[in-house]
Length: 498
Image 1 (cartoon, rainbow, N blue to C red):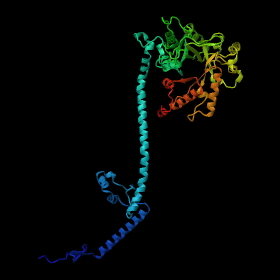
Image 2: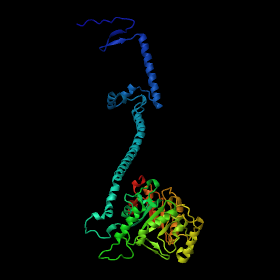
Image 3: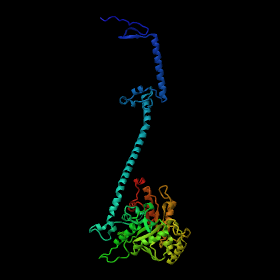
Image 4: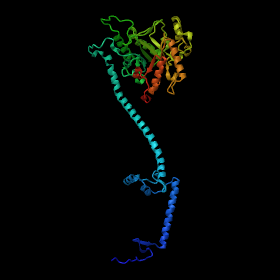
């Protein structure tokens, strides 16, 4: 039998217990405790109403612990493992109003998540594109570095048989004139040819019909180089060009049992085009009047064998080698001999205009041309003013000054005369000027050459090459021999950063 119910002792700080109601004790609170509970309920209601108002205004007043409780289970677990991932007071995605409805909360969350997702969809592909371009550029640079260590060796090996043919034994695949057996000549000029891995031979191997040598006169010797700091005792005009050309032309015109006499005309450098003359452009860097006599003397071996193109007073006789003087070459000394010339002038292309019509120089008799040459020689200037203007006064330059009897090239700086193609194309004024200059030079029997062409980016350079060849330029002044002679100038994506 259970003991009778006893009420707990009553004190000032304890509530009074009453008999059980529905098998549960009924607790009765004192009046002061009831008032305390009422005040707490009122404060809770006020907090709820303020939360609702804040939720309608887009402000969230939930604490971090409350917001953590409404997160999905996987995020609560992640927050337990990594406390720093728990949502803070500044996390707008998870801080929801206390009284917000589920649909309203979902829509608000979708609106807030939509923009970041769209940004990521655009940012990640763009970032991937830049990474891919960076990898491609790195590969191109790496390949260029590797090639730079071996390109000279490859080029030297390819011309080894030209310089040391006596080391090779009998070969049924060879013949006396097979020096350039598979080379197709192309209208390009090897600018600063002495920079090539093998001067002269590298240009011929590529198919260039012209080479350039800058000469400096010191102690009666002609040294080849771009500046005086690059000159050496071994790199002379004779060693790099005159002596090799003698050996090449002699090899191309052999005396054998099948061919006992040297034929006429002489065969040139290119076996695929024997009548093609190789242009040797000599750029006078020192004083023209003094350098002229030494150049004439050093060309004697080629002259004595009949290897040079020359003017005999009435006609130009084509030879295997055509010598052209530029830089400080004095025009008055080029035209001094009226009956024989084997050094031709590089005329100023910009001075030739297409407005002479009936005054075409080709219609004049040799006597008239010689008389004009003598007048220019008497009144010409010996000042070293550069290509096309040395040895002649500007006031004396007329429509009949430069022609095929005294000049071979008509050249000008592309950048100075035509200008920069700012929009990566030539405008109408530039095209009109190019066409006028080309027509003026061709009417005088001269070959057009532009130097100082844009070289970067390659797409622009290739575009300029294409336009010039299409308009009738005879020789491209180039540094990249392989690209110029292969003539594959179609646009490529890699050309924009190479």
